[in-house]
Structures are given as structure tokens and as C-alpha cells.
Image 1 (cartoon, one colour):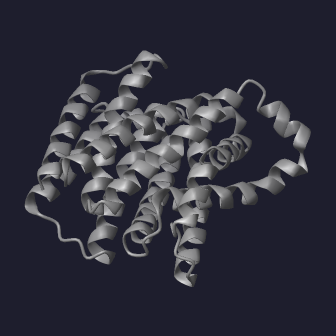
Image 2 (image 1 turned 135 degrees about the horizontal axis):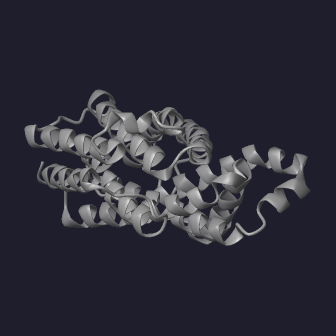
Length: 290
């Protein structure tokens, strides 16, 4: 991987952890919040997308359209699963489980379907990344998942992680093989989610407006940051970075998430999470070297 690709993924990790913190704070709003930040994303990124479309940023083939539709559907399921997980469990449970399951499955997908060949160093780095994530998630105690809300966090986090793996492989193929510009792919994905969620909002518009009271600025933050974090990752893939390295590297957001949870949400961060962060960083370094 080039230095530019590494920097893109690192920046994306910081942005990703930040918007998840914001989403957690508005978890009670549910699908209406997902609709709101998708609306913000569609409006904010429309000028950039329109410019790229005039430059041929989307391959208008059946394959290109099909991948956009599949991507948008998986992203919608991901957004709803994540928001539901944040409703019923802690950020420090859902986030690490989701981010830990995603890279493992997406890396396997890259090996099986994209023809990427793992190196010994890359595999070692992947194992360290996954191990570090588990340390952060459990704090060295599997019983942490047995407390109230812990099991729900595992279930929703795992479901979210599986969807992360799905859209990561689909979107990587779309930008690398079909040549679709990352921001164009993400924007059309957001647009599809907007129309799929629109009937839910129109069915009870007053209830939706009331639910969003006090949450609009948070929706603006997520609407701006969520696409940006993913566009940076897709840009790294477009620049030639292999998916089998990019997907696990994104998980350094775990370290950022742990710090945000400690400083802002006042969550307990013990020695196991700190050790997990160190293991995670080591894994990222090995992945970069591989």
C-alpha cells in the first residue's frame, strides 16, 4: 500500500468513529434518524456527484446499475441494524463486534471472490487486528457479554458486521472493476435508502418531525461525516490498495472509538482495552507492511 492510501484509511477511521458516536447519541430516534441523515447526505454531496456524472463518473450499464441497487439495499440494512443495536446496547459492545466481524468476513471475501492472495505478514496482521478487537470488546472477560444488553449487542453487532462485509466486497468490485467513482456510488446508495425510507416518514410525518426535535444537528454531522469516511476508503481502493488490507486497517477506528467512549460517554476503559489497542496498532502496521 502507498503512503497516500494508508493516510486515507487512517483519516477515514477517525471520521468513522466520530459519526458513530453521534449516531449513538441519537439512537432513540431509530429509522427516522437514518432517513434524516440520508437526506442531509443526498443534499450535501449532490453538487460533487452532478459534476462527476458529467465527467462519466458512473458506468450506465446493467452491471453498474445492479451493483448500485445491491449496494444501496445492503447499506440500508446496515444503517438500520446499527441504529437498532445502539438502541438496545452500549456503543462499546455494538461497535467493536460490528467492526470486528466485518473485516474478517470481507477479507475472506476478497480472497475468495477478488483473487487477492494473502501474504504471511498480512495474515499475521489480520489475526492481531481481530485479536485486538476482541480484547477491546470483552475487556478480557467473556462474561462482559452476559450482562443486560450485552447479548443484544453481540447479536446486532454481528448482524451489522456481516452487512459491512457484504457491502465492502460489493462496493470494492464496483469501484475497482466497474470504474464507478466512489462518491457517485455512495450518493446513489444514499438516494436509494432515502426513497426506501420515505414511505415510513410520510405515513406519520408529525411523529417523525417530533422524533427529530433536538437531533437535527446530529443528523447533519452524521450526514456529512458518514459518506466522507466511506468515500475515503473507496478512494484508497480506487488508488490500487487491496481490499484484504484496507478492510482490516479501517478497524483502527476501534482505538478512536474507545477514547471517545472514555472521554465523552464516560465509559470505563481498562487495561484490556488499552492492550487491545496496542495489539490492534501492531496488526495495522503488519498489514501495511504486507
